[in-house]
Length: 487
Image (tube, rainbow, N blue to C red; front, side, top):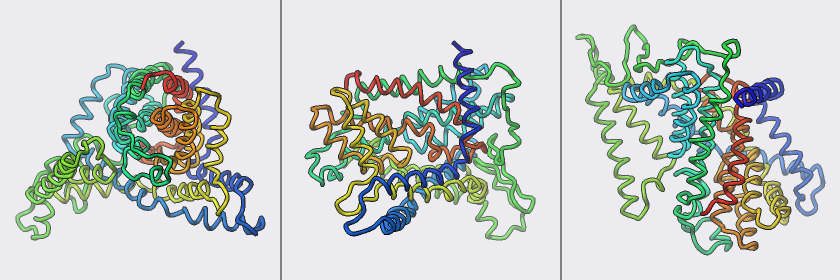
């Protein structure tokens, strides 16, 4: 069994290494594919010829959507920076070190990484991406000689459970008063998370995929031949994670995690302020107090903390917790400076994916967008009783072009909900199926791997072969589970 799984993983990795382009080129190729499909599938505006139709698609679709992820891109940049800086502090490093010391073997470590990443992803997807990548680095530091690509692949694979977690976009949108489906008259009520996230079906899938299947798969895929391993020298990591020490300019040194406040007697007032433990701690405490008040206010309004998680509050909490743990403003500044080096992929590639999403959603008056056509086509061929499984595969297919849970639901949600109502299928079940489908094909869609790859220093080709194996196994588990498990 082990040999068969390992051989399949090796073949998958070789194919990916040979044929999968760089993540940026993948986005460009996907742009071209989406453009051609939309050009031939979406009806042009009345009285517009082929050339005019192509021009409208280029300007209104591609260019019109190109900058729509600026806000989200900045949020992703911040979560990468603040999460990275937080990991440079002694308290967080201590925790990651203790966790990394739990497994006794390389195979056990490879199995543990996706479990840690899945647990963090269930709480919040942004947390999962950052924690998974940093834990993979910590494992490589603590267990020299471990195969680093498979460890990073495990860190990314834990992300597959995110849409079944507390920050799942589709379940939270269904639980939002006045959401777009209610405004369109498709729904007349909201659906609470008790009927989506906290159902037996969803929680069983989270446990089965994230905490049983993934560790077993990565243990089986782990290479036994040292010649087939690709270890990494921890010295190659540009930022220290063994206590948070970072070199600073002018021969100074700032230590993450309650840094030393010793400064020369002749230091200027500005230098003393930069190294002031009191200022750093005070700012951190005030920020965390604001986080506590944010959640308390939500509870008073009837919103539980797990339903009030979003990127903004996670970034806010990471930032001020990092300030508190670093101790001084100077130490935190140094940590963020090093973290900035890891965000170039987001800055370069996210606008292209926004453009792809614009193409997929493009629809002149009287026509139907490409994304909606895909959803309608998949639903139309679904045999009776198979709508949840087809919703899962539909969301997985559309996710290639619209790798955003909320954005994808905006273009396929109406079709899926209408089909559920017409067939008598449970709307929450179909929504949960779509949620898992959205997360499922992330395993072979580089969009969400960009932050993790930036932290690890690997390319998409290094990990995607293993992720293909996750895609195949998880696809079977979820498609069957979402169809038969009780809600």
